[in-house]
Amino acid sequence: MRFIFFVLLCAVLMVINACSNADDLAYSQRIMQQRAAITYKFLDPATTPLTQAKLANFKGLPYYEVNKNYLVEATFNSSGNQTIFAMPHTLNRAYEYVEVGTLSFNLNGKNLQLMSYLRKGEMGDSVQLFVPFTDLTGGKTTYSGGRYLDVKATLSVKKVRIDFNLAYNPYCAYNVDFSCPIPPKQNHLPVAIEAGEQYKTVY
Image (cartoon, rainbow, N blue to C red; front, side):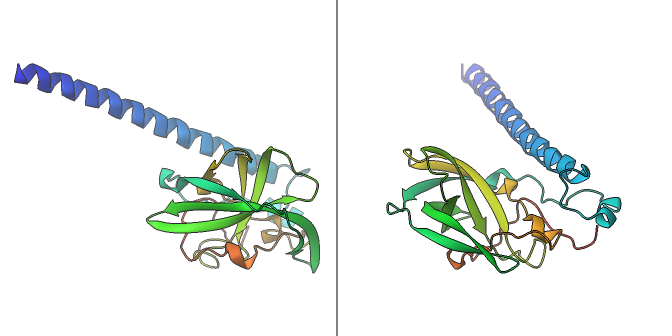
């Protein structure tokens, strides 16, 4: 009887493990598809941020390996007053944004927080939050000016998923003619986010 129970238990665990592996594979494939779409934009002369000279030498964007540990659930806390402010951009420019609310989450055992934003006039319940940030990889394996996240959220719901595997560089990392938002000081993370897009200076 014990042997039969043991065999059944092993079978159940094998099914659970197989389902888990299938979910992980599907998740990795979704990330890779999104990265391929970004690469396509870089290769297309109509949408690339690269100069003609850089495009000629372009061989793809560098990324960290997909790591599901960097997919986290965050608690969204609305700012309430929807403060409008001028977010500094490169090229000495600034554009109006709204502080929408904070995203609080735990990553690798550390409690962290990021402020999320929307361009003025984009408010609604279902939105795509703009989350610019820096972390301790900046200037080493990632762009020194920081990276961005676009986070889908329903503002009436308290839980939001943040996927750092989708972190990307601003276009000004590749072409100084672009003006890009500079991550506010409150979004400087004191940890290394080893996920998402990396950076190299030569293309």
